[in-house]
Image (tube, rainbow, N blue to C red; front, side):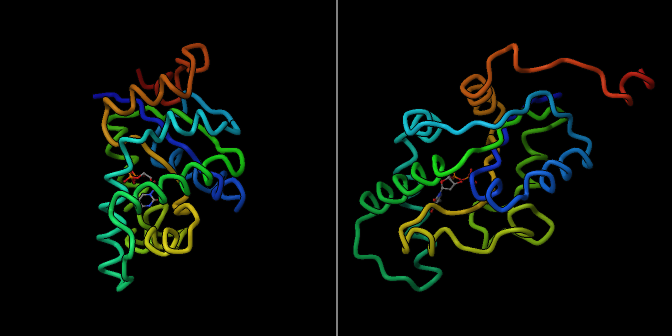
Length: 185
Ligand code: TYD
């Protein structure tokens, strides 16, 4: 049940100087940092992290968001998904990101819970997206810029394994005891 999960502090978190604030939340919750680095990714790498499989999902979610927000859609779901995906790739490469691997019991689920809903306007207060961001994915897509939701976190343990492998080489992940582990074990 001890899991590892990939967390990215996206360009907006870095540009808004929220890196310390966000990392502090994870440390405070008891999650262990086992890998951490700053990296300015290339477009090619961003496309590996956000592959084209995401296009239909983003298209569908954008349409749902628009319906709720009363925004009319002239594009098809496919066209919308494609456009939002391109915005996302541009946004991901706009500034450096902080990539980290966090470890803990049920880490994947716990981190997703702390991160909150994908669209900032739906993320509850108390979550990272809910406390530090406001602009809905729907508005961002309408205006043609990537949704600024501060953070990425793996969705499932399988996704985490794949994403950690993509972002980190094995020698960048450390196995060490925290003081609690050292003195309580
Ligand atoms: P998704 O995997 O649905 O969300 P999450 O990051 O919460 O797992 O979407 C991946 C990313 O795609 C998301 O973090 C931001 C971007 N995105 C948009 O730009 N517009 C959208 O309408 C959606 C749903 C996602």
